[in-house]
Image (cartoon, rainbow, N blue to C red; front, side):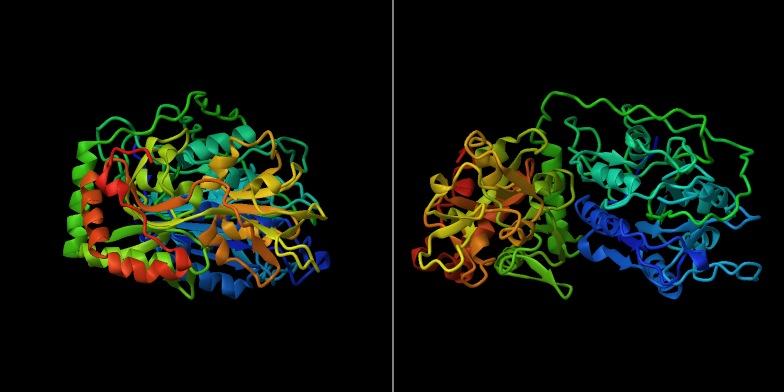
Length: 605
């Protein structure tokens, strides 16, 4: 079965979550939906880490008015040419005598008996029509709301086979059902599962996502039956939502066919549910019960099935292998392709994709639409030395670097990427990579909160108590530590769990640092990273490193040996520029590392 692959295209995601409303139950609006605040944040982070969307391709709107919503939707449809993703979370309602689903915006209300009975609400038919006008190749619509399944009828009645083929609906509940509203819980049940599945570092298509959502969602509707996610798309369509590890065989394009079909559907994915014709839609009066609607449309994703299917049992969840994920072996064909891409980027006929870290002050961060920091400066030096004419920076989380390099998401990675044997050999869930360099080294250290009022610069507050900390072995056993997923510090602590069992894993450094004086007692990572997060005298960095120095290299796909050779030449040709960038970070003890990865490529240093 053909699979649409949107990687590398002009994709757009519009996330709309309506958690606050201007009107109340007397106006036909059940009330505010504070849970939806978690939907917005969670989905944005999941999409950003999916390798399908750059950060600037994702727009989040919090409780927009009806007019603002349509303006945002129009802009998204105009900008997307690959995959368009539109997400809406808020109240969904039906008219007493009709079957049309309406999505209530912030200023929505109900006017009984009027020509415009639902001012401030968007009819799903109009939303689908607007989306169909986009140049996006595929559009995915996800509804998480009361009556979400009623949107399937609007999709079935769309004019033109092309429009139906390019739009896919994923709905949180069957038609004519009210969803139970939870209290004091972040996010809604459907979207929490949606985000969890998108966050996993494995290949995910819309078809697989649908099957697993039906399997794992365990919550009752207001009517007392099980909430069952629904879908509506053409039976022969599917869309790649997140790439996984590349196949070990050499058949086809290991990096994926960007912006096109990606071979046949995997055998371990659930089959599409049967198409239902002559669906019965009940007339139901509007009920003042708290409910919510989630709509997401993603250009470049085709529909899987059409109609509702309450008689269809949940699709079986694919069985996960218990064996470690093997790392892909170097591939001569991939090596030739990547080198050809480099030559095309040097000629200006292709764009070179540079993976960088997100949210590292002074090193790599994006502000006002521009990337800045020492690592960004060095990446530009290397790109200039390589003669690359067209390039762009793509933010990638620490835990996703190896996946991005081996799935074709980026061509190289520059961003505090420490060289280690585990990363060169590969580990379960993290494919092997190769490095050019190293170009900088830094110590691995610990940041703690300084004990308030203490005159000793090494006294920390840990679990509320005063502790003298100069190194890792001074930290008490009950200390709450924070490390970033995929970091060298995380690898180190895997071997010290017995002594330091309270370890939290976060996706970004700022999430660790921001919780240092409330949730965590210590943060472990590279000293050069910690230095840029220090806030006056509130935090301090312990004197002694907890392991060997971290040496940064430029990460590459495990097969890209020819590209590595060119980058090594560029590193050696720009040593003066490198020293000008990194000497201020290294201070008086600055000393550039030996270029072992370029001079001794078989070393396991």
